[in-house]
Image (cartoon, rainbow, N blue to C red):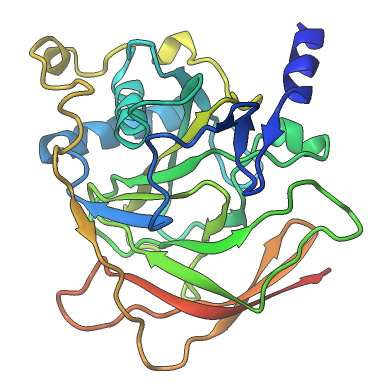
Amino acid sequence: EDAESSESELSIQVDEDGRICSVEGPLTRGMCFDPPVRVFDNFIATDHVEMLRGCCEQCFRIKPSKGRYSAGKTFWADSGQSPRCELECLALAILKRHCPQPAAASGVEWWTLCLDSNSEVGWHWDRDYVLEDSGVNIHPMLSTVTYLSLPGRHVSTVTLDILSPASRDPAHPISLPETALCTVVASRPGRHLVFDGRYLHGAPSRLRRQNLLGTRRVTFLANIWVGHKPSNASKLPPELQHWRNSDATRSGRCSMENVLCAVPELVEAGKPRKRRSRTRSFCLEDGRVSVTLPRPPVKRGRAGTVVAAQVPVAWYSK
């Protein structure tokens, strides 16, 4: 098995854009990368949001093992398999929506996070973290976040159009441009964020660290892989291989065909507040990254706004 694994790792090919490819060419057929960051509201069918939130909370309680950048354990589902629970159903539906005709063997790596409303998720690139430890950086084709929290003041997801180096070099671990396109996505029930799997991202905590009583930030994370299965993704354990809502399953109300809305609402990113944003510093790999985060508008009725702006960025060693 180890020999087969090593052979598989050695056969991985990456194109000039840093994406997994084959000898025949790119494996991006059927996937959309333009624009590289997209946000959809009403992505999850309204009558499924509460049920899926409960499934995420249950999954996180059962497998809350600590990950490299946030709590949680990742699971794997092959594109051709049948779902064995509501969350696998959601993961496979997301895979089918964003990669309907994969160019090679494909699957979805998924996990859940149920954190306090102001708990941060550290800045990172999604990778095969086993290969990362050997000095090779391999990324999913697309990364996604689906928001299932109750309404509240939760931390936002932030993406930067900064690509990681193709390999790990301790002498020169990070090289950043002077500016980057920064997108800030606020949490909203049923919202879905999809972005280029090579992008730097995180969910930084707010400067004011108060949590709303009883609120939790519940998210479903799913990464789409084509031509490679991440070594760190686990098989779904037996205790999660059951339908939480068997009545809904038997009646056909929970399936890959109807868990997602047929025509979700594409959200256009707005302009940030004109008032100067504050530059903040965060841990990133073996150093720190400073980012001037754009501030969303504060007008009434604008809760859950998505904003984007070109911002200064810098990295420095500890």
